[in-house]
Image (cartoon, rainbow, N blue to C red; front, side):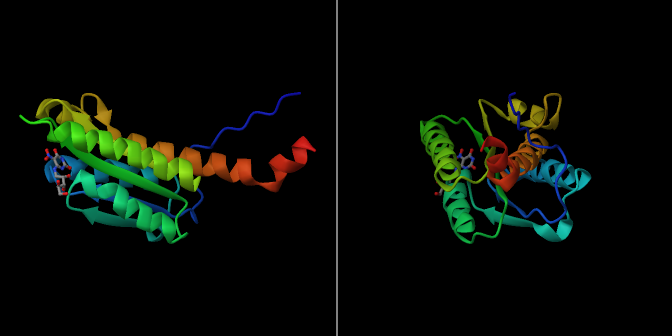
Length: 165
Ligand code: INI
């Protein structure tokens, strides 16, 4: 018989979340932060167990996330930001660097490090994804964090080990 493991969509109130949010394009990232916070709270997280860390731009997110992971205090790190293409290749450098680094942080730490950074061609795309017609990427990031925390708790638990021996 197979065993299937899937994270729950409700957080335990003792789960600890930290949101790293960049201030560049703040009129967008504040909406991502709001969507993320509301979704965490609506789904069982306790306000006292949510920290928010603000960094200047998206490029600074991975460094802050690394330091927060090293504290061994959080069940998940949620990264929020907004990069919008300009006239130069700056956009590509930022997007390539942070997507790779955020991915590595999660893989190497074994912790949920959630990628809630908008990478958009223009302002309209960013507005659409920060509470507009395509939803709110911050809210989606919160749901992914909750589900991964729950999944990893199951996967790491004795119950899983016992069921396989
Ligand atoms: N930072 C962003 O978060 N979004 C952007 O669109 C952006 N653009 O376009 O330049 C941006 N630049 C700043 C960057 O993230 C760093 O803060 C800066 O390079 C200092 O390291």
